Length: 307
Image 1 (cartoon, rainbow, N blue to C red):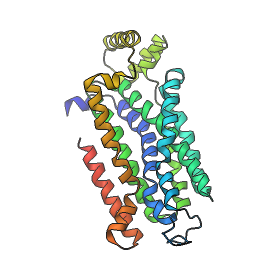
Image 2 (cartoon, rainbow, N blue to C red):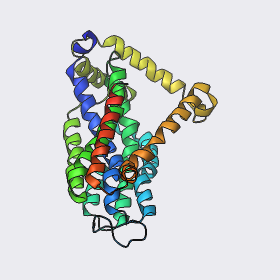
Image 3 (spheres, rainbow, N blue to C red):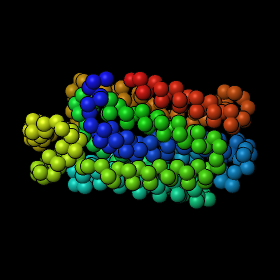
C-alpha cells in the first residue's frame, strides 16, 4: 500500500475526472444493446415488437450499431492534429460538447437519419477521447501508479457499457438519452479544474507553467529531476519520429496490431448482446434479457478491473 498512499490525491482525481469522458464513450457504444430490440422491426412485420414510435429494419440497425466506428476514424485523425495545438486539457473538455449534443439528438430523434448522425458525432468524439485521455493520464501520473491509472481507461469504458444497460433497462429511449447527457456535463465541470499536462507545457516551452503544474501533481516531491527527464523525452521524440509502416515492419508492433484487431472484434458481440441473448432464450422478454446483459457487463467490468 505504501506506493499508493504517498501519491498526491490530485493524480487520482485528475484520472477519475478525465475517465468520465471514457464513460461517456462506453455508454454510446453500449447504447445499441438495450435500444435495438425496442426499435428494430421483426422480419415480415410492419411494426416494432414494443410499439415504438421509431421503427427501423435489421440493416439500419446494423449501421446504427457500427456508426460510431465510422466517426471514430474522423475523430482520431482530428485528435492527432489538435492535441498538440489545443493541449490535452482543452481537447478533453472539447469532447464533452459532441457527446452532449449527440445524446440530445438521440432524445429528440423521430427518424433513423438523426440517430445515425448522432451516433457518428459520438464516434468522432470517441476517436478524440481515446487518443487524448490516456495520453493525459500517462503524462500526469507518478511512474509508480502510471500502469494502474492507464489501465483505468478500459475499466471505465466497460463501466459505461454497464451503466447504459442499467439505465436502458428501466427508462424509455428518450429518457435514457436525457439522463445520459448529464455525464458529459459532469465530465466538463469537473475536469475544467484540473491542471494542464506538464509534458505538454514543456513542449510549448512554457517551463515555469510546467513546473507549477507538475508541482501540483507531485506536491512535496522534488520535481527538478523529473522535469529534466521530460525535457530529454521531448528532445528524443522530436529527433526520432516514427512512421506508420513501422506498425507492420517491426515484429513486436505487428504482433500488437493482430492482438488489438482480434480484441476489437468483441465489440460486435457487445453491440448486439441484448439481441443475441433474446434469440438464445427464444422469447422476447426484454427486461429479463436486459438484466442478463447487465450481468454480462458486470462480469466484464470485474475482469477488466483485475487485469
